[in-house]
Amino acid sequence: MADAAVVTDPLTDMVGKFIAFNKVLTTRTAIAQTPKELVWTLNKAKLYRYIPVVPKEQRHPTPLLLVFALMNRPYILDLRPGHSFVEFMVNSGYDLYLLDWGVPGPEDKNLKFDDYTLDYMPRAIRKMKSIAGVEEFSMLGWCIGAILTTIYAALRPDDGLRNLILLTAPLDFSNKDAITFARWTDERYFDVDKVLATFGNMPGEMIDYGAKALKPVENYIVNYLKLWDNIDNPQVTEAWQAMNTWVTDNVPLAGGVFRQLIVDLYRNDLLMRGEWMIRGERVDLSNITANLLTVIAEGDHITPPCQSQAILSKVGSADKELFSVPGGHIGIMAGSGANKRTWPLIDGWLGRRSK
Amino acid sequence: MGDEQATNGKPPDPMEAFRGLRDSYLDAWAKAMVETVNTDAYAQSTGIVLDTYLSASSPFRAAVEKAMLHVLEQLSMPSRADFVGLAERATNIEMRLDDMDAKLDRIEILLTKPEANKRKANPAVKNRKQNKGAK
Image (cartoon, one colour):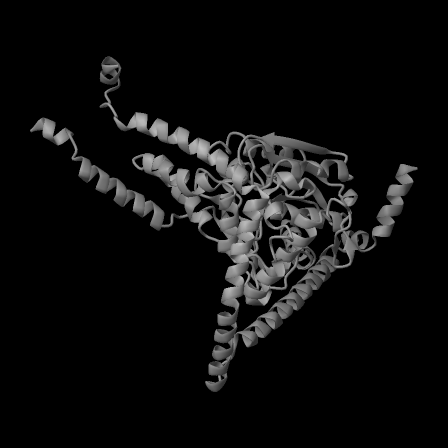
């Protein structure tokens, strides 16, 4: 009898695993738990301020604004309690703000980088400075967010930007062989106008497919096998479910931005060539004088490291550094090792420059 | 081997060898696929698939939109274009409000901290001072 209690029926075991597997796949986990308040809105964009937990006199006086990509939810920065960059930075004494771009609707299909950087960002930054009661601020841009912050820093160098952090920034599109997206969106194969004439905005599902198809076996097979193999390990399943909640929460990209991204950047590399015009103003990278930190992910297949390196030689900043971190495009900030590698690295660099 | 398992207290897992083999195979496949998707041939084939889908769905999409527009008109209901126009107007109003908020902030600063505002309002004074310092 005692032996019978220990030995599990393989069929029951398999059914139990399958039920648990299905539950993880089909349910969403609670994410973005760090307390915050909404302080500004414009159209779909929202500016949040995270409630400080460190007394004011011990806080860094320079506020930090987080700017994430346009086609993904920004809560990857605040994925789950105990594993959140936002929580880490708030606990480290930063006055932290997050610009959430929201979900563009059909009415936003003509929005361009011009609108985001010259209409939305200056207004959000003004509000942040007004609330913080300071003139100087820091900004962290990740992925497309890094393009936005770079444009802003180049076009508005006197607006008080003191520190600029670029994470996995796709800025240099000259090495087409190394950039798979550049190959796929080549004008011989991809008709951007036809896509946008059909959909208006670039559907989130298509962007998601593009990102996953860069590593199809990992994303469509290995990822799920890892979950199956570790279905009895709550630590692994919790992390997997949180990441899956984020990955499956797709956001479309405004049509105007998508066209600029493909035509101006992927095809013509206008930013690095110094020929990109944003609402009649040339984006001159030498105008950037803020302290600059560029973080690249060594295993990044979405933004290969070669896309983020050249900016250092183009900017006018006297204080500039490049950190290379092991990991992938998302993994360096949201992976299991991020709290030991990337986050302390950013805190260390920024803390010294936020006094 | 048996002793080791006894010490660990875990029953032998017959699937372990299979998993190792599976992972090696998947690893090799993954590397091959990464190389495959980064080729002109793959780009061309996905381009053709997408183009075919867009060309095929376009007439149906246009027909549905036209029919829907007609139905909405008959029912005296606003169309998508009407909502888009309204949303654009709402965003413009939001921007005007935001501009007014900025102006009110400036007025507030002017009233509460006139000295600080004078310096801020006239950056030329600041620049001249900086230039003198540089000389």
